Length: 460
Image (cartoon, rainbow, N blue to C red; front, top):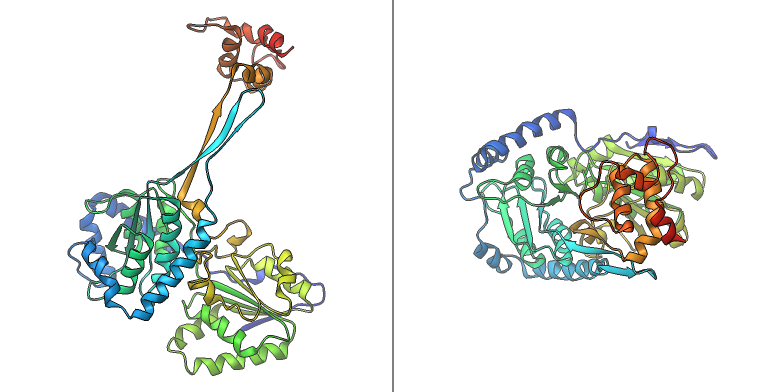
């Protein structure tokens, strides 16, 4: 049975009612810290030993040869290749619409300000292995980087038991513009991307989901290298009214639950009898699922049904949960879009299962988890560029702003800040004299300061 909560009329849903697993735990953080340090000290040797210990695979060369990547497309089912190509086209099209250009604005006084948008030099994308294969994760992480103009895109992924990488994953890497693929996973892969080894050069930023140890390693290396987010277990919230087919709601909940026993699934509906119908449909579907054990554990351990009294209460509940994926399986779903404040991705109407967002719709499926949709956004092209401010002043522009700059600088006690403006306004050259502070009109310790005479004249 899935845990249930019935709210009274006008009773707000509280975040304390949610049992969040979190992205990682103290044990994972401690283990990841040791792994990261080991890789930093011993490089490739540590990667090879840790891969044998954790994945049961003794790898030779860590890098997948380019000819193997080039040949991968011919080794997979043509229908799978076509599906990956179709998904890539739509993902690329969506992310191309996110591209920002550098811009410059000239003020009337001659000052020029703007922003310069520059792609990162390199990124590393982590693609999980284990319970499932994820060529879609390659597309979702590499294509925005490619669209942004990143010249080097390195992919790391755990090897299969035979030491190889799934051919569909390699084909996706080729389609998406990945330049390097390495057979290493876990916290050790994150360390290699962050600090480099003999084989793997360090990158500027790391993106992609992983288990608790991967999440912990990303937290550890963050600051030395950029990261997209610290992703926790996946989650879905389905809001269903009386028009929603229970069988479809059930399978949509299961589509998230089958990812991981830690995945969280929320059903928000107005009728306890309807919730019963959904649970009955889940049982019927489980009889045919090859991942029934994982799905059942997720639903029983981390599932929650919230019975609300009306749609206002349902929307309030959603905004507290702040789910990674939100399905509005209700009549006139678009009417409620403006009321949703916190959700990673919003799926509107009965014809929009979460699976379309996972694979082909175009928006990114790397989304904020664990309630972080309160402040975080999906992975986008913006993650793969950096921005530099552009400032160029004319004499007139500096004359216009000089008094205000010096006023604030002296209030903050930053004498040289003020003097750097005062000397320009006075036409001074050479070293700043011992008593040059007098040119600013007052000591920084002396309360409110007046602007220098030259600046006052210019301002007049």
